[in-house]
Length: 195
Image (tube, rainbow, N blue to C red; front, side, top):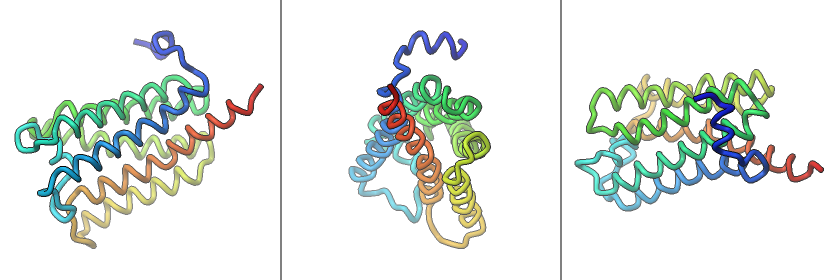
């Protein structure tokens, strides 16, 4: 299905659609936070965020996975509508990130290596999206986000700090979220001020 046909299905290309770029990440983080709050066994020093979505071992799996699915859907809608006219090439990359976030929820840890593969795809997809946004919009925030995200993973792999993989997962995703949310707010304000 082409982007043009998808835009026909999702007709909102104005200000309201820009807010999907804020709501998507925000809702995903709200569901993650609630899942952590309802899981006294979760420890930042030893767990991955995806442990919350394990369909057999986690009682909050439906909540956690729904949050990722909903967040990914809203981000994808934002990427193919309002954001596409703002940063065309980045929008393609952002769609991949949004879709891979949904795959993390669909193929939870029960799927073993397949879950690992889609998780790597999601976190790896944040880098080209950040690079493309820097190139297209000269966004220092995107470049900073990329640096913070990469540093969190490199320091984790080098065992500079002791923590579960949830820590670099959170740092890198929040860093990338910063420029996505900023772009959505910027588009929203520009459309509000345009005649």
